[in-house]
Length: 179
Image (cartoon, rainbow, N blue to C red; front, top):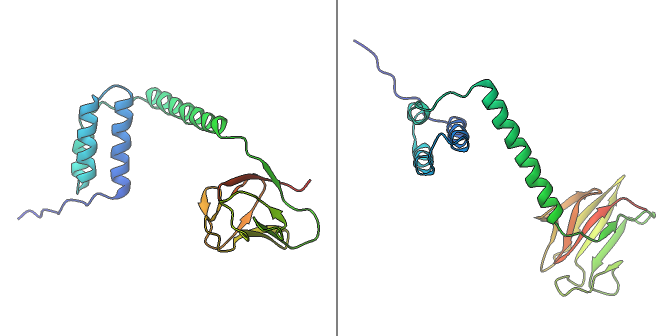
């Protein structure tokens, strides 16, 4: 009597390894675009590791040098993409963190604010910078168009550091150290 084991269920890691293998082979020209798309679809629907193994079993094994060259080209391509994105990014006005002893700076369109921004997307009392110990926290004060830190909309307070990107409505600044 032989015991048959149920197939091993494919994990997300198994699926990602198979997809990575398919991507690499397509980049090397070993798979046509039609075959690549079909196998990616099958990999996403695969239920077991056996099904995933079947998708890549007929692909030639990469030699050590070919793998290293592919990885190097991929790294250079990624670096080039990041440099191009940074180059295209608009040059943002600087917002220097305050150097005096005050612990609270209010940002908004209202004349009573410490930093007045006359843009219509900025609320009268929009946000505040609050000093806590040796760092600064950014807090949205219930503004209509929100406050974002590095592209993420604030829902609570967040620590601000030089190099961060802060947006009050549509007004975007690059945070710098105190002068």
